[in-house]
Image (cartoon, rainbow, N blue to C red; front, side, top):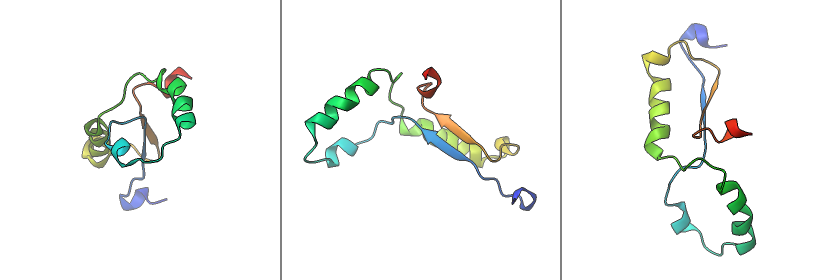
Length: 82
């Protein structure tokens, strides 16, 4: 709709990314933590925030001038396995 105005609209769907979020968590449910272990076992690895930032920089650059209306999955291949 806005492509003719030079506006592109894209999104990034990141997978697990290493952050310090665990330090801010309190009263964590052990049951919930145990449930996430099965999913974490099939993740290729956690990503670095810089890796997701590089995707954003690419999408904002002229190198991505023909990329529009898409979601870029940056999850190390995790969703490709399913």
